[in-house]
Length: 251
Image (tube, rainbow, N blue to C red; front, side):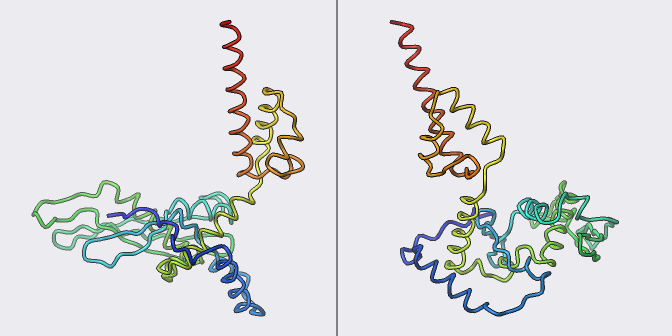
């Protein structure tokens, strides 16, 4: 049973100043340490928005990562799934153990720097405690998706989650801060810039004034976050202009 995404910590002690001091402390600890370039993936911070705590009967609660978030992040790093990285030479087998049928997947995981074999299994059919047989219709999809996640963990993706760092509220707070900072710094796409220009023209807005509203000098500095702010402001202005025009037509 999923318990939902990890919430941002609410403790007042986790202020921006405290997080900055924590960053400085980490930098001092790692200063001068020479890391192998292939090790950098192990140092990536997982975005907490794509994690959730999972409770399974009879097992300790654990933190799970959304596999499609991992696929997205890996595609950013290596390129298109199935072309630059992924699974190949997939072989499926079924094995019966009494009332349980296991689906076994053997495959080879490949990525730009190499490849390695990997195996996994999942219950495809089993007898429940109530005495009836249950069939997992999504077994093939589930075992493949889970195998991808396991393979990515071997090359460094999600290391902080698998090492249990997400059990620390301080670490989760830092992860949220890093993720939000990255989103704030992400530049808007050309399509988003063109949309802002179109809305400015449609609302007869002064470009210089609108850009100063979000504290930038040109559209080249427009971030995704500020794009959303500008878009919302311009759309509201367009609605007001339309309402005034309709009001004037009635009179």
